[in-house]
Length: 300
Image (cartoon, rainbow, N blue to C red; front, side):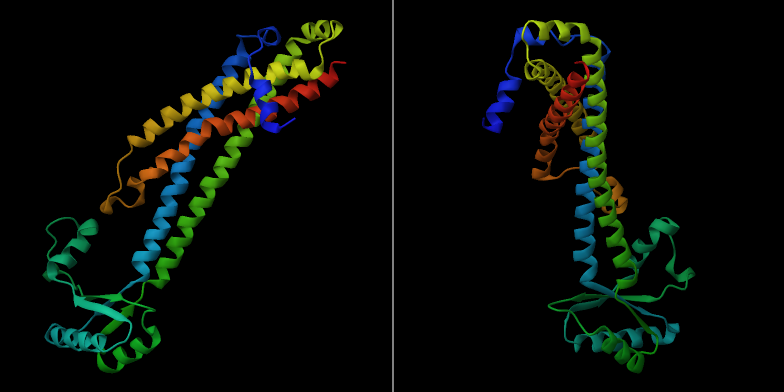
């Protein structure tokens, strides 16, 4: 039989077989609650995985194409060294643009640490030059040597020392989100297996009577598989809807808030959580069927 037809035949309503499975009780509540809770957690794990993936791409694209030159010189020489550094950059292959940051821009960079109204004149703040790369970029070592020779007070920072650890951390968080999804699926399978086993054991007398009248183990197991799969699907839908609503209410992505304000879905990514309920139903299907067949063999 075709696997799809087999699954559909099991999920097809059968009122006679459904009488084997208790319609109420702790196994019903346990299955619904566990499916809803696991779906809710899966939505957040998926949101974390996708948000950190976007973060890694953004950091890689933005920081890999930019560098900073710091001019640390006496006040009387700062302007001259800044102009000298800009001349060096203008003749360096692989550099698209270079400009000195204004006092207002440098003040904005310091505000997250020192607050509004900080006076740059009261702090030994160096002049910063923003460098934007193009093509394959520039020769970092060659530019450093030129700056050392022509601009003694210049220090080149290509962001590599702290960019790579940040990107690795972002991808590690993404892998953690994926691992969380796998653990959630495994936990759900374990809980549903316990619930199905308990329901089968509680109905041992009914199962023995059904066998006496000719019912096969496949027929009895299909009743439990159908009921527990539908319960997991319903619980998964409830948990997913609540989880998506909670993610929707999270603060949106903001530059000043970092990635902690962007833990959500964007655009078509909102479609991904919709696969959680059917995936939960698939987990419940195989977990229940395995538990049912093992328990029925033990009841002989």
